[in-house]
Image (cartoon, rainbow, N blue to C red; front, side, top):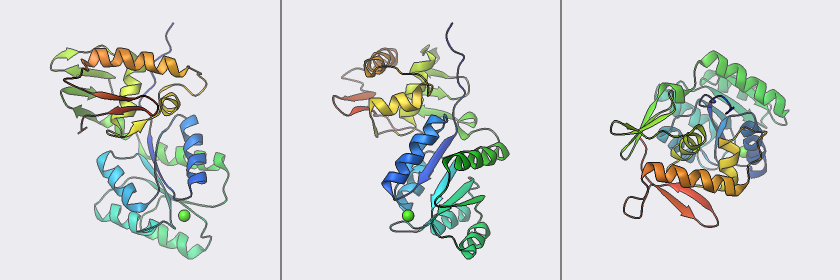
Length: 236
Ligand code: CA
């Protein structure tokens, strides 16, 4: 029996300039079933979030360029209520008070236990309600993507994607133009205890492309032999 469809996962934007920590958080949250996006500076974080809203932002304070507080203020100025968990090595209570004053939802000091971060994220998301993806339908080129019903239509035609194909499409359309390595796709589109080979990823992408009518004339997904795959159409 095929496994039951997984609901769209909550999208977490991790804003952290220390690459080792960012990767550690990304890996752990992805293993918990979250769709994770990393930004290493504040401006990129705001751009990513504007392009494809996160359900929760894990926000470091000390960042190159605009700092974490400024990111938070920019969001709240725009009436954006996305939950924000501040993650910082600044241990002072003043920062904590300032963060909460600017509208942060929670605050965790480094070093922290990964389990605690995950528990806090889950608690905030429970309060926040259904993930952003569940509220949204996307349009990309000729395709209408319904993130609640897991369907993709071209015009009125349902392209009948398998759940795996849908997950791959969902992951790639979350970041159009970004190259997704096969391993990234495995991490984000498969259950965390599944161990598909990278060749399996290629096979699913192949059938996905066929269903999408991807061709040289109408390219949808680009293959980069070593690097992975890239969704080429803009997503709205
Ligand atoms: Ca930092």
